[in-house]
Image (cartoon, rainbow, N blue to C red; front, side):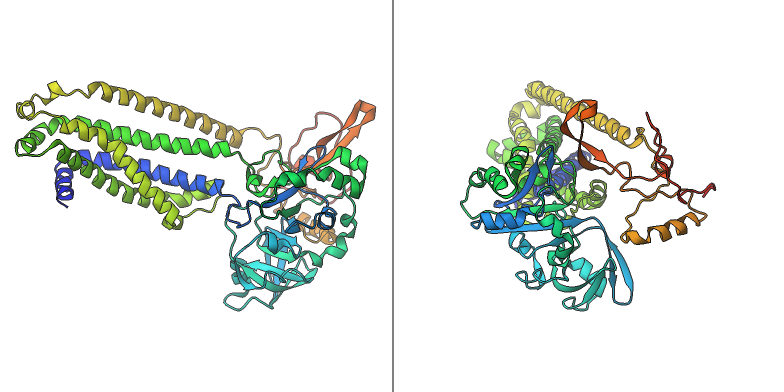
Length: 549
Protein backbone atom coordinates (compact mmCIF):
# COMPACT_ATOMS: atom_id res chain seq x y z
CA UNK A 1 0.00 0.00 0.00
CA UNK A 2 2.91 2.33 0.78
CA UNK A 3 4.26 1.82 -2.74
CA UNK A 4 0.87 2.76 -4.22
CA UNK A 5 0.69 5.95 -2.10
CA UNK A 6 4.22 6.88 -3.16
CA UNK A 7 3.41 6.19 -6.79
CA UNK A 8 0.27 8.33 -6.59
CA UNK A 9 2.23 11.26 -5.07
CA UNK A 10 4.84 10.95 -7.81
CA UNK A 11 2.16 10.97 -10.52
CA UNK A 12 0.49 14.05 -9.01
CA UNK A 13 3.86 15.76 -8.73
CA UNK A 14 4.52 15.35 -12.46
CA UNK A 15 1.05 15.93 -13.86
CA UNK A 16 1.91 16.96 -17.41
CA UNK A 17 4.22 13.99 -17.89
CA UNK A 18 1.64 11.64 -16.31
CA UNK A 19 -1.25 12.92 -18.46
CA UNK A 20 0.77 12.51 -21.67
CA UNK A 21 1.78 8.97 -20.71
CA UNK A 22 -1.74 7.98 -19.61
CA UNK A 23 -3.33 9.33 -22.80
CA UNK A 24 -0.75 7.57 -24.97
CA UNK A 25 -1.40 4.24 -23.27
CA UNK A 26 -5.15 4.89 -23.35
CA UNK A 27 -5.23 5.27 -27.13
CA UNK A 28 -3.05 2.18 -27.55
CA UNK A 29 -5.20 0.04 -25.24
CA UNK A 30 -8.49 1.28 -26.75
CA UNK A 31 -7.24 0.55 -30.28
CA UNK A 32 -6.13 -2.94 -29.22
CA UNK A 33 -9.47 -3.69 -27.54
CA UNK A 34 -11.50 -2.59 -30.58
CA UNK A 35 -9.28 -4.57 -32.96
CA UNK A 36 -9.35 -7.58 -30.64
CA UNK A 37 -13.17 -7.59 -30.59
CA UNK A 38 -13.32 -7.32 -34.39
CA UNK A 39 -10.77 -10.11 -34.89
CA UNK A 40 -12.41 -12.35 -32.29
CA UNK A 41 -15.81 -11.79 -33.94
CA UNK A 42 -14.57 -12.61 -37.44
CA UNK A 43 -12.42 -15.60 -36.48
CA UNK A 44 -15.30 -16.94 -34.36
CA UNK A 45 -17.65 -17.49 -37.31
CA UNK A 46 -19.87 -20.53 -36.58
CA UNK A 47 -17.55 -21.73 -33.81
CA UNK A 48 -20.26 -21.26 -31.20
CA UNK A 49 -22.08 -24.41 -32.34
CA UNK A 50 -21.25 -27.35 -30.06
CA UNK A 51 -20.76 -29.71 -33.00
CA UNK A 52 -18.85 -27.21 -35.15
CA UNK A 53 -15.83 -29.54 -35.38
CA UNK A 54 -18.02 -32.28 -36.90
CA UNK A 55 -20.34 -30.24 -39.16
CA UNK A 56 -19.56 -30.12 -42.89
CA UNK A 57 -21.36 -28.48 -45.79
CA UNK A 58 -21.64 -30.62 -48.94
CA UNK A 59 -20.60 -28.48 -51.92
CA UNK A 60 -20.31 -29.04 -55.65
CA UNK A 61 -17.15 -28.79 -57.71
CA UNK A 62 -18.09 -29.14 -61.35
CA UNK A 63 -17.25 -26.33 -63.74
CA UNK A 64 -16.79 -24.09 -60.70
CA UNK A 65 -17.14 -24.15 -56.92
CA UNK A 66 -20.77 -23.96 -55.90
CA UNK A 67 -21.95 -23.98 -52.25
CA UNK A 68 -25.39 -25.15 -53.39
CA UNK A 69 -26.11 -28.74 -54.37
CA UNK A 70 -29.11 -30.58 -55.71
CA UNK A 71 -31.83 -31.44 -53.23
CA UNK A 72 -31.52 -34.99 -54.50
CA UNK A 73 -28.28 -35.36 -52.55
CA UNK A 74 -29.87 -35.44 -49.07
CA UNK A 75 -32.14 -38.51 -49.43
CA UNK A 76 -29.36 -40.36 -51.26
CA UNK A 77 -26.83 -39.59 -48.52
CA UNK A 78 -29.21 -40.66 -45.79
CA UNK A 79 -29.68 -43.96 -47.61
CA UNK A 80 -26.02 -44.63 -48.49
CA UNK A 81 -24.36 -43.24 -45.35
CA UNK A 82 -26.52 -44.37 -42.42
CA UNK A 83 -23.60 -43.88 -40.03
CA UNK A 84 -23.87 -40.09 -40.34
CA UNK A 85 -25.34 -38.47 -37.25
CA UNK A 86 -27.51 -36.08 -39.31
CA UNK A 87 -28.01 -34.97 -42.92
CA UNK A 88 -30.01 -31.79 -43.41
CA UNK A 89 -31.24 -29.67 -46.31
CA UNK A 90 -31.74 -25.89 -46.14
CA UNK A 91 -33.29 -23.70 -48.82
CA UNK A 92 -32.30 -20.11 -48.07
CA UNK A 93 -34.27 -17.18 -49.52
CA UNK A 94 -33.44 -13.47 -49.50
CA UNK A 95 -36.84 -11.90 -48.95
CA UNK A 96 -40.34 -12.76 -47.86
CA UNK A 97 -43.50 -10.82 -46.97
CA UNK A 98 -45.07 -11.81 -43.66
CA UNK A 99 -48.65 -10.90 -42.75
CA UNK A 100 -49.71 -11.09 -39.12
CA UNK A 101 -53.22 -10.93 -37.65
CA UNK A 102 -54.75 -7.51 -38.18
CA UNK A 103 -53.31 -7.37 -41.71
CA UNK A 104 -49.98 -5.99 -40.44
CA UNK A 105 -47.27 -6.70 -43.02
CA UNK A 106 -43.52 -7.07 -42.63
CA UNK A 107 -40.84 -7.54 -45.26
CA UNK A 108 -38.23 -9.89 -43.84
CA UNK A 109 -34.81 -9.86 -45.49
CA UNK A 110 -33.84 -13.44 -44.83
CA UNK A 111 -35.58 -16.70 -44.09
CA UNK A 112 -35.02 -20.36 -44.82
CA UNK A 113 -36.85 -23.62 -45.35
CA UNK A 114 -35.28 -26.47 -43.38
CA UNK A 115 -36.03 -30.14 -42.85
CA UNK A 116 -36.62 -31.96 -39.58
CA UNK A 117 -32.93 -32.86 -39.08
CA UNK A 118 -31.80 -29.24 -39.16
CA UNK A 119 -32.11 -28.91 -35.39
CA UNK A 120 -29.89 -31.98 -34.98
CA UNK A 121 -27.14 -30.20 -36.90
CA UNK A 122 -27.32 -26.70 -35.43
CA UNK A 123 -27.94 -26.34 -31.69
CA UNK A 124 -29.58 -22.92 -31.45
CA UNK A 125 -30.77 -21.73 -28.05
CA UNK A 126 -34.48 -22.56 -27.89
CA UNK A 127 -36.75 -20.32 -25.83
CA UNK A 128 -40.05 -21.99 -26.76
CA UNK A 129 -41.02 -25.17 -28.58
CA UNK A 130 -39.52 -28.61 -29.03
CA UNK A 131 -36.52 -28.66 -31.40
CA UNK A 132 -37.07 -32.35 -32.17
CA UNK A 133 -40.51 -31.76 -33.70
CA UNK A 134 -40.73 -28.03 -34.49
CA UNK A 135 -39.93 -28.46 -38.20
CA UNK A 136 -41.35 -31.92 -38.83
CA UNK A 137 -44.90 -30.93 -39.87
CA UNK A 138 -45.87 -28.88 -42.95
CA UNK A 139 -46.85 -25.23 -42.48
CA UNK A 140 -44.79 -24.80 -39.32
CA UNK A 141 -42.37 -21.98 -38.62
CA UNK A 142 -39.72 -21.16 -36.02
CA UNK A 143 -39.03 -17.47 -35.30
CA UNK A 144 -36.12 -15.67 -33.74
CA UNK A 145 -36.78 -13.88 -30.46
CA UNK A 146 -36.76 -10.34 -31.86
CA UNK A 147 -39.03 -11.26 -34.77
CA UNK A 148 -41.49 -13.02 -32.46
CA UNK A 149 -41.58 -9.93 -30.24
CA UNK A 150 -42.09 -7.71 -33.29
CA UNK A 151 -45.05 -9.79 -34.47
CA UNK A 152 -46.76 -10.58 -31.17
CA UNK A 153 -45.34 -8.24 -28.54
CA UNK A 154 -45.43 -9.83 -25.09
CA UNK A 155 -47.99 -12.44 -26.13
CA UNK A 156 -46.95 -16.06 -26.36
CA UNK A 157 -45.82 -16.83 -29.91
CA UNK A 158 -46.36 -20.60 -29.87
CA UNK A 159 -49.57 -21.50 -31.69
CA UNK A 160 -49.93 -18.14 -33.44
CA UNK A 161 -50.48 -18.15 -37.22
CA UNK A 162 -48.72 -15.94 -39.76
CA UNK A 163 -49.01 -15.79 -43.54
CA UNK A 164 -46.00 -15.90 -45.88
CA UNK A 165 -46.17 -14.26 -49.33
CA UNK A 166 -49.96 -14.57 -49.37
CA UNK A 167 -49.40 -18.29 -49.99
CA UNK A 168 -48.67 -20.19 -46.80
CA UNK A 169 -50.46 -20.01 -43.45
CA UNK A 170 -47.77 -20.98 -40.96
CA UNK A 171 -48.17 -22.03 -37.34
CA UNK A 172 -45.44 -20.90 -34.95
CA UNK A 173 -43.93 -24.01 -33.36
CA UNK A 174 -40.79 -22.55 -31.80
CA UNK A 175 -38.85 -19.44 -30.81
CA UNK A 176 -35.05 -19.33 -30.67
CA UNK A 177 -32.59 -16.80 -29.32
CA UNK A 178 -31.47 -14.19 -31.85
CA UNK A 179 -28.57 -15.48 -33.89
CA UNK A 180 -25.09 -14.01 -33.38
CA UNK A 181 -23.91 -11.97 -36.32
CA UNK A 182 -20.94 -14.23 -37.02
CA UNK A 183 -22.79 -17.04 -38.76
CA UNK A 184 -22.81 -17.86 -42.47
CA UNK A 185 -26.51 -18.80 -42.28
CA UNK A 186 -28.45 -15.83 -40.84
CA UNK A 187 -32.24 -15.98 -40.86
CA UNK A 188 -35.19 -14.35 -39.13
CA UNK A 189 -37.69 -17.18 -39.74
CA UNK A 190 -37.17 -20.89 -40.27
CA UNK A 191 -39.97 -22.72 -42.08
CA UNK A 192 -40.56 -26.40 -42.46
CA UNK A 193 -39.28 -27.74 -45.77
CA UNK A 194 -42.31 -30.04 -45.84
CA UNK A 195 -44.38 -26.91 -46.55
CA UNK A 196 -42.95 -26.60 -50.07
CA UNK A 197 -41.78 -30.15 -50.75
CA UNK A 198 -44.68 -30.88 -53.12
CA UNK A 199 -43.73 -27.78 -55.14
CA UNK A 200 -40.13 -28.88 -55.63
CA UNK A 201 -40.62 -32.52 -56.56
CA UNK A 202 -38.54 -32.07 -59.69
CA UNK A 203 -35.54 -31.06 -57.61
CA UNK A 204 -35.58 -34.24 -55.56
CA UNK A 205 -34.18 -36.53 -58.24
CA UNK A 206 -32.26 -34.41 -60.79
CA UNK A 207 -28.58 -33.93 -59.86
CA UNK A 208 -28.29 -30.84 -62.05
CA UNK A 209 -31.37 -29.10 -60.69
CA UNK A 210 -29.57 -26.93 -58.16
CA UNK A 211 -31.56 -24.24 -56.34
CA UNK A 212 -29.74 -21.07 -55.35
CA UNK A 213 -29.34 -21.17 -51.59
CA UNK A 214 -29.88 -24.93 -51.45
CA UNK A 215 -27.35 -26.02 -48.83
CA UNK A 216 -26.73 -29.50 -47.48
CA UNK A 217 -25.09 -30.21 -44.11
CA UNK A 218 -23.85 -33.40 -42.49
CA UNK A 219 -22.73 -34.20 -38.96
CA UNK A 220 -20.01 -36.82 -38.69
CA UNK A 221 -19.95 -39.24 -35.76
CA UNK A 222 -17.32 -38.57 -33.12
CA UNK A 223 -13.83 -39.84 -34.03
CA UNK A 224 -14.98 -40.38 -37.63
CA UNK A 225 -12.30 -39.10 -40.06
CA UNK A 226 -13.74 -36.96 -42.82
CA UNK A 227 -11.32 -38.54 -45.30
CA UNK A 228 -13.25 -41.81 -44.98
CA UNK A 229 -16.39 -40.11 -46.27
CA UNK A 230 -14.55 -38.13 -48.96
CA UNK A 231 -13.09 -41.30 -50.48
CA UNK A 232 -16.58 -42.71 -51.02
CA UNK A 233 -18.07 -39.64 -52.72
CA UNK A 234 -17.15 -40.50 -56.30
CA UNK A 235 -18.68 -43.98 -56.02
CA UNK A 236 -21.71 -42.40 -54.33
CA UNK A 237 -22.30 -40.06 -57.31
CA UNK A 238 -21.76 -42.86 -59.85
CA UNK A 239 -24.19 -45.17 -58.06
CA UNK A 240 -27.00 -42.61 -57.86
CA UNK A 241 -26.55 -40.53 -61.04
CA UNK A 242 -24.21 -42.45 -63.33
CA UNK A 243 -20.53 -42.55 -64.28
CA UNK A 244 -20.76 -39.57 -66.64
CA UNK A 245 -21.96 -37.31 -63.81
CA UNK A 246 -19.24 -38.70 -61.51
CA UNK A 247 -16.53 -37.89 -64.06
CA UNK A 248 -17.53 -34.24 -64.37
CA UNK A 249 -18.55 -33.45 -60.79
CA UNK A 250 -17.23 -33.77 -57.27
CA UNK A 251 -19.04 -33.43 -53.98
CA UNK A 252 -16.71 -31.75 -51.49
CA UNK A 253 -17.02 -31.64 -47.71
CA UNK A 254 -16.41 -28.11 -46.52
CA UNK A 255 -15.76 -27.71 -42.75
CA UNK A 256 -18.27 -25.42 -41.09
CA UNK A 257 -15.47 -23.34 -39.54
CA UNK A 258 -13.96 -22.69 -42.99
CA UNK A 259 -17.10 -21.48 -44.78
CA UNK A 260 -16.59 -17.81 -43.90
CA UNK A 261 -12.96 -17.95 -45.07
CA UNK A 262 -13.22 -20.14 -48.18
CA UNK A 263 -12.96 -17.69 -51.08
CA UNK A 264 -13.37 -20.34 -53.75
CA UNK A 265 -17.13 -19.97 -53.24
CA UNK A 266 -17.77 -16.40 -54.38
CA UNK A 267 -21.17 -16.97 -55.99
CA UNK A 268 -24.45 -17.93 -54.30
CA UNK A 269 -23.15 -17.11 -50.83
CA UNK A 270 -25.33 -15.43 -48.19
CA UNK A 271 -22.59 -13.61 -46.31
CA UNK A 272 -19.29 -12.32 -47.62
CA UNK A 273 -16.17 -14.46 -47.52
CA UNK A 274 -12.78 -13.23 -46.44
CA UNK A 275 -9.36 -14.61 -45.61
CA UNK A 276 -8.04 -15.43 -42.16
CA UNK A 277 -4.78 -13.71 -43.08
CA UNK A 278 -6.62 -10.38 -43.20
CA UNK A 279 -7.53 -10.64 -39.53
CA UNK A 280 -4.16 -11.99 -38.47
CA UNK A 281 -2.68 -8.92 -40.16
CA UNK A 282 -5.17 -6.77 -38.23
CA UNK A 283 -4.09 -8.47 -35.01
CA UNK A 284 -0.46 -7.73 -35.90
CA UNK A 285 -1.39 -4.06 -36.30
CA UNK A 286 -2.88 -4.11 -32.79
CA UNK A 287 0.40 -5.50 -31.45
CA UNK A 288 2.38 -2.78 -33.25
CA UNK A 289 0.09 -0.10 -31.82
CA UNK A 290 0.63 -1.27 -28.25
CA UNK A 291 4.39 -1.57 -28.89
CA UNK A 292 4.46 2.04 -30.09
CA UNK A 293 2.53 3.12 -26.99
CA UNK A 294 4.95 1.23 -24.73
CA UNK A 295 8.01 2.69 -26.50
CA UNK A 296 6.55 6.16 -26.10
CA UNK A 297 6.02 5.48 -22.39
CA UNK A 298 9.58 4.17 -21.98
CA UNK A 299 11.13 7.16 -23.74
CA UNK A 300 9.17 9.66 -21.66
CA UNK A 301 9.98 7.76 -18.46
CA UNK A 302 13.72 7.59 -19.15
CA UNK A 303 13.73 11.27 -20.13
CA UNK A 304 11.97 12.04 -16.84
CA UNK A 305 14.59 10.02 -14.97
CA UNK A 306 17.18 12.81 -15.15
CA UNK A 307 14.81 15.32 -13.52
CA UNK A 308 14.21 12.86 -10.68
CA UNK A 309 17.86 12.12 -10.04
CA UNK A 310 17.99 14.05 -6.75
CA UNK A 311 14.87 12.27 -5.48
CA UNK A 312 16.49 8.93 -6.25
CA UNK A 313 19.76 9.99 -4.58
CA UNK A 314 17.97 11.08 -1.40
CA UNK A 315 16.02 7.80 -1.25
CA UNK A 316 19.22 5.79 -1.60
CA UNK A 317 20.99 7.83 1.05
CA UNK A 318 18.06 7.22 3.40
CA UNK A 319 18.38 3.47 2.90
CA UNK A 320 16.26 2.54 -0.12
CA UNK A 321 17.61 -0.45 -1.99
CA UNK A 322 17.62 -0.76 -5.76
CA UNK A 323 14.95 -3.47 -5.52
CA UNK A 324 12.68 -1.12 -3.56
CA UNK A 325 13.17 1.64 -6.14
CA UNK A 326 12.37 -0.74 -9.00
CA UNK A 327 9.18 -1.79 -7.24
CA UNK A 328 8.29 1.88 -6.68
CA UNK A 329 8.74 2.83 -10.34
CA UNK A 330 6.89 -0.27 -11.49
CA UNK A 331 4.12 0.75 -9.09
CA UNK A 332 3.91 4.16 -10.77
CA UNK A 333 3.70 2.44 -14.14
CA UNK A 334 1.02 0.09 -12.81
CA UNK A 335 -1.12 2.95 -11.50
CA UNK A 336 -0.88 4.84 -14.80
CA UNK A 337 -1.59 1.66 -16.76
CA UNK A 338 -4.64 0.96 -14.60
CA UNK A 339 -6.01 4.45 -15.28
CA UNK A 340 -5.20 3.98 -18.97
CA UNK A 341 -7.11 0.69 -18.98
CA UNK A 342 -10.19 2.34 -17.46
CA UNK A 343 -10.05 5.18 -19.97
CA UNK A 344 -9.35 2.68 -22.76
CA UNK A 345 -12.50 0.75 -21.89
CA UNK A 346 -14.44 4.04 -21.86
CA UNK A 347 -13.13 5.04 -25.31
CA UNK A 348 -13.84 1.52 -26.57
CA UNK A 349 -17.44 1.89 -25.40
CA UNK A 350 -17.56 5.29 -27.10
CA UNK A 351 -16.19 4.23 -30.48
CA UNK A 352 -17.42 0.64 -30.73
CA UNK A 353 -20.94 1.45 -32.08
CA UNK A 354 -19.67 3.51 -35.06
CA UNK A 355 -16.97 0.92 -35.80
CA UNK A 356 -19.59 -1.86 -35.74
CA UNK A 357 -21.76 0.22 -38.06
CA UNK A 358 -18.93 0.87 -40.50
CA UNK A 359 -17.98 -2.82 -40.63
CA UNK A 360 -21.60 -4.06 -40.45
CA UNK A 361 -20.85 -6.49 -37.63
CA UNK A 362 -22.54 -7.21 -34.31
CA UNK A 363 -20.09 -6.30 -31.55
CA UNK A 364 -20.83 -4.28 -28.42
CA UNK A 365 -19.28 -3.26 -25.12
CA UNK A 366 -21.12 -6.06 -23.26
CA UNK A 367 -18.67 -8.51 -24.85
CA UNK A 368 -15.89 -6.90 -22.81
CA UNK A 369 -17.53 -8.33 -19.69
CA UNK A 370 -17.01 -11.93 -20.76
CA UNK A 371 -14.44 -13.84 -18.67
CA UNK A 372 -12.22 -14.52 -21.68
CA UNK A 373 -12.13 -10.83 -22.60
CA UNK A 374 -11.48 -9.76 -19.01
CA UNK A 375 -8.60 -12.24 -18.96
CA UNK A 376 -7.20 -10.68 -22.13
CA UNK A 377 -7.49 -7.17 -20.65
CA UNK A 378 -5.70 -8.22 -17.46
CA UNK A 379 -3.02 -9.97 -19.49
CA UNK A 380 -2.64 -6.88 -21.68
CA UNK A 381 -2.27 -4.72 -18.56
CA UNK A 382 0.48 -6.94 -17.16
CA UNK A 383 2.30 -6.96 -20.51
CA UNK A 384 2.11 -3.17 -20.77
CA UNK A 385 3.38 -2.73 -17.21
CA UNK A 386 6.36 -5.02 -17.89
CA UNK A 387 7.14 -3.63 -21.36
CA UNK A 388 6.75 0.01 -20.42
CA UNK A 389 7.94 -0.10 -16.83
CA UNK A 390 10.89 -2.47 -16.47
CA UNK A 391 13.50 -0.61 -18.48
CA UNK A 392 12.75 2.86 -17.01
CA UNK A 393 12.68 1.31 -13.53
CA UNK A 394 16.14 -0.24 -13.99
CA UNK A 395 17.53 2.99 -15.50
CA UNK A 396 16.17 5.23 -12.74
CA UNK A 397 17.21 2.93 -9.91
CA UNK A 398 20.77 2.67 -11.25
CA UNK A 399 21.80 6.26 -10.43
CA UNK A 400 24.60 6.55 -7.86
CA UNK A 401 23.62 8.75 -4.87
CA UNK A 402 26.74 10.92 -4.92
CA UNK A 403 26.46 11.68 -8.63
CA UNK A 404 22.71 12.25 -8.41
CA UNK A 405 22.97 14.74 -5.55
CA UNK A 406 25.64 16.74 -7.45
CA UNK A 407 23.26 17.23 -10.43
CA UNK A 408 25.58 15.17 -12.63
CA UNK A 409 23.14 12.34 -13.34
CA UNK A 410 22.83 13.42 -16.95
CA UNK A 411 26.56 12.83 -17.44
CA UNK A 412 26.27 9.30 -16.08
CA UNK A 413 23.07 8.45 -17.95
CA UNK A 414 23.90 5.45 -20.16
CA UNK A 415 20.47 4.91 -21.74
CA UNK A 416 20.83 7.49 -24.52
CA UNK A 417 21.77 5.00 -27.23
CA UNK A 418 18.86 2.71 -26.43
CA UNK A 419 16.47 5.68 -26.30
CA UNK A 420 17.60 6.75 -29.76
CA UNK A 421 17.11 3.22 -31.02
CA UNK A 422 13.61 3.08 -29.54
CA UNK A 423 12.73 6.39 -31.19
CA UNK A 424 13.94 5.07 -34.55
CA UNK A 425 11.88 1.89 -34.11
CA UNK A 426 8.84 3.91 -33.06
CA UNK A 427 9.01 6.21 -36.07
CA UNK A 428 9.72 3.33 -38.46
CA UNK A 429 6.62 1.44 -37.27
CA UNK A 430 4.56 4.63 -37.43
CA UNK A 431 5.65 5.38 -40.99
CA UNK A 432 4.85 1.85 -42.15
CA UNK A 433 1.37 2.07 -40.58
CA UNK A 434 0.76 5.57 -42.00
CA UNK A 435 1.80 4.38 -45.47
CA UNK A 436 -0.48 1.35 -45.15
CA UNK A 437 -3.36 3.58 -44.03
CA UNK A 438 -2.87 5.87 -47.03
CA UNK A 439 -2.86 2.90 -49.41
CA UNK A 440 -6.06 1.51 -47.88
CA UNK A 441 -7.69 4.96 -47.95
CA UNK A 442 -6.75 5.35 -51.62
CA UNK A 443 -8.18 1.91 -52.40
CA UNK A 444 -11.43 2.68 -50.58
CA UNK A 445 -11.73 5.98 -52.42
CA UNK A 446 -11.18 4.11 -55.68
CA UNK A 447 -13.89 1.57 -54.80
CA UNK A 448 -16.38 4.26 -53.86
CA UNK A 449 -15.74 6.72 -56.69
CA UNK A 450 -14.50 4.70 -59.65
CA UNK A 451 -16.70 4.31 -62.71
CA UNK A 452 -18.66 1.08 -62.21
CA UNK A 453 -19.84 1.00 -65.82
CA UNK A 454 -23.41 1.79 -64.81
CA UNK A 455 -25.37 4.53 -63.07
CA UNK A 456 -26.61 3.64 -59.60
CA UNK A 457 -27.90 7.06 -58.48
CA UNK A 458 -31.61 7.55 -57.79
CA UNK A 459 -32.33 3.89 -58.57
CA UNK A 460 -34.44 1.87 -56.13
CA UNK A 461 -34.43 -1.92 -56.38
CA UNK A 462 -36.80 -4.32 -54.64
CA UNK A 463 -38.05 -7.90 -54.97
CA UNK A 464 -41.58 -8.62 -56.18
CA UNK A 465 -42.96 -11.52 -54.13
CA UNK A 466 -46.00 -12.14 -56.39
CA UNK A 467 -44.90 -12.18 -60.04
CA UNK A 468 -48.49 -12.42 -61.28
CA UNK A 469 -49.08 -8.83 -60.13
CA UNK A 470 -46.18 -7.43 -62.16
CA UNK A 471 -48.36 -5.78 -64.89
CA UNK A 472 -50.46 -3.98 -62.26
CA UNK A 473 -47.34 -2.82 -60.43
CA UNK A 474 -45.85 -1.66 -63.72
CA UNK A 475 -48.88 0.48 -64.56
CA UNK A 476 -48.96 1.98 -61.06
CA UNK A 477 -45.29 2.91 -61.15
CA UNK A 478 -45.40 4.36 -64.66
CA UNK A 479 -48.37 6.54 -63.74
CA UNK A 480 -46.49 7.97 -60.75
CA UNK A 481 -45.05 11.41 -61.66
CA UNK A 482 -42.10 10.81 -59.32
CA UNK A 483 -40.94 7.79 -61.31
CA UNK A 484 -38.98 8.40 -64.50
CA UNK A 485 -38.17 4.85 -65.61
CA UNK A 486 -39.22 1.36 -64.60
CA UNK A 487 -37.39 -1.84 -65.46
CA UNK A 488 -37.99 -5.47 -64.53
CA UNK A 489 -35.06 -7.87 -64.39
CA UNK A 490 -33.53 -10.72 -62.48
CA UNK A 491 -31.25 -8.31 -60.63
CA UNK A 492 -29.29 -5.06 -60.61
CA UNK A 493 -25.93 -4.90 -62.47
CA UNK A 494 -23.99 -5.72 -59.31
CA UNK A 495 -26.01 -8.89 -58.65
CA UNK A 496 -25.04 -11.90 -60.76
CA UNK A 497 -26.16 -15.49 -61.22
CA UNK A 498 -23.56 -17.95 -62.47
CA UNK A 499 -24.41 -20.35 -65.27
CA UNK A 500 -22.53 -22.72 -67.56
CA UNK A 501 -22.21 -22.19 -71.31
CA UNK A 502 -20.48 -23.54 -74.40
CA UNK A 503 -20.30 -22.33 -78.02
CA UNK A 504 -18.76 -24.93 -80.34
CA UNK A 505 -19.41 -22.72 -83.38
CA UNK A 506 -17.13 -20.08 -81.81
CA UNK A 507 -14.47 -22.62 -80.89
CA UNK A 508 -15.53 -22.81 -77.22
CA UNK A 509 -15.89 -26.55 -76.88
CA UNK A 510 -15.21 -26.83 -73.15
CA UNK A 511 -18.01 -25.93 -70.76
CA UNK A 512 -17.22 -22.63 -69.05
CA UNK A 513 -18.94 -20.34 -66.54
CA UNK A 514 -20.44 -16.91 -67.09
CA UNK A 515 -23.04 -14.69 -65.44
CA UNK A 516 -26.61 -14.47 -66.70
CA UNK A 517 -29.25 -11.81 -66.20
CA UNK A 518 -32.79 -11.47 -67.60
CA UNK A 519 -33.65 -7.88 -68.50
CA UNK A 520 -36.23 -5.82 -70.39
CA UNK A 521 -35.76 -3.00 -72.90
CA UNK A 522 -35.43 -0.01 -70.48
CA UNK A 523 -32.80 -1.79 -68.36
CA UNK A 524 -29.70 -0.60 -70.25
CA UNK A 525 -30.98 2.99 -70.51
CA UNK A 526 -31.96 3.14 -66.84
CA UNK A 527 -28.50 2.08 -65.67
CA UNK A 528 -26.75 3.94 -68.51
CA UNK A 529 -24.94 0.78 -69.62
CA UNK A 530 -23.11 1.19 -72.94
CA UNK A 531 -23.01 -1.73 -75.34
CA UNK A 532 -19.67 -2.55 -76.96
CA UNK A 533 -21.38 -4.55 -79.69
CA UNK A 534 -24.85 -5.62 -80.80
CA UNK A 535 -28.10 -3.91 -79.89
CA UNK A 536 -30.50 -3.66 -77.00
CA UNK A 537 -33.30 -6.16 -76.41
CA UNK A 538 -36.57 -4.98 -77.95
CA UNK A 539 -40.05 -5.33 -76.58
CA UNK A 540 -43.05 -3.01 -76.41
CA UNK A 541 -43.48 -1.95 -72.80
CA UNK A 542 -45.06 0.70 -70.63
CA UNK A 543 -41.96 0.83 -68.47
CA UNK A 544 -40.68 4.24 -69.53
CA UNK A 545 -42.07 7.74 -69.35
CA UNK A 546 -40.78 10.89 -70.94
CA UNK A 547 -41.12 13.13 -67.93
CA UNK A 548 -38.78 14.19 -65.19
CA UNK A 549 -39.30 13.11 -61.58
